[in-house]
Length: 70
Image 1 (spheres, helix red, strand yellow):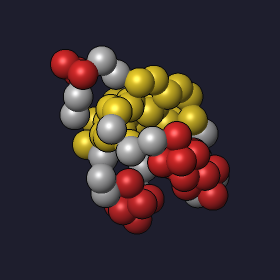
Image 2 (cartoon, rainbow, N blue to C red):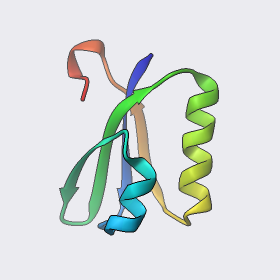
Image 3 (cartoon, rainbow, N blue to C red):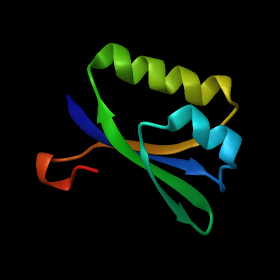
Image 4 (cartoon, helix red, strand yellow):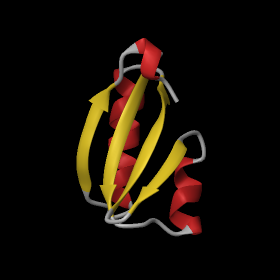
């Protein structure tokens, strides 16, 4: 398992955040930051698919070092 940080444009509402229950959420003025663990490459692909299906704009995604987990 690896920890990832995703930055999405805008503030996400409760219904949209419900699609990312496994992630810790940090709201910033112009973006929402999600941090959480993803199992493997298939998990990353599934996560990116969820973002696309919801019509969200991904600003950035990075794998975090083990000491910067959620």
